[in-house]
Length: 209
Image (cartoon, rainbow, N blue to C red; front, side, top):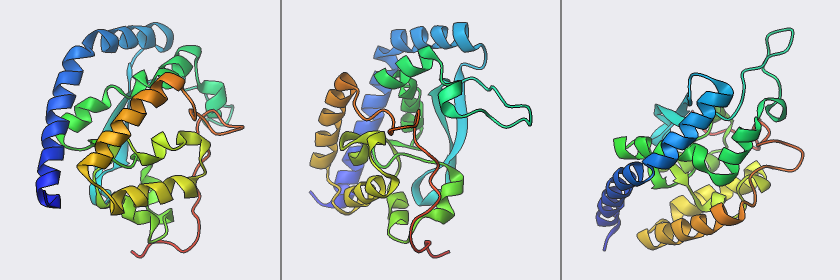
């Protein structure tokens, strides 16, 4: 099967699994929403613009896991101080990612692909790192099953590019199977000394354009 046909099959799988997932996971979605509403109040969802394929922006959805607490100057406090106990649970169990099945259903994301990061990172990538946007972003990816946030940014981006260059349906299925194991063992949720990941400030030559 050539790559064009594989991509059509990949999209079909995304549609079927995301629709079925939203239906079957509705009790978990409702339970997580209730927890967030009771501990953080409204809104229940975290909505933020992220770059999709070729850097085209879209709005990603996740359950809120942090407060909006700010310092005296109005700046948000560090993630470690804003991440709630319920938020830690949602992140460790990956329940906070479930709303992204809606992004997959809409075609903005795929089940598997490089994670969609922040818009301001776009001009900080090297030309090679920018290749991670040659495919749709995913809920899980090669970097997530090879270490998640325990990896450095450079290590994660190299794995993203490796995925883009070697993509196949078989690789996607392997990543999905490994993701299930990672959700169970909960390793790599954060980087040492950080609640999540430090900001990416760039590395090496910038991407052209």
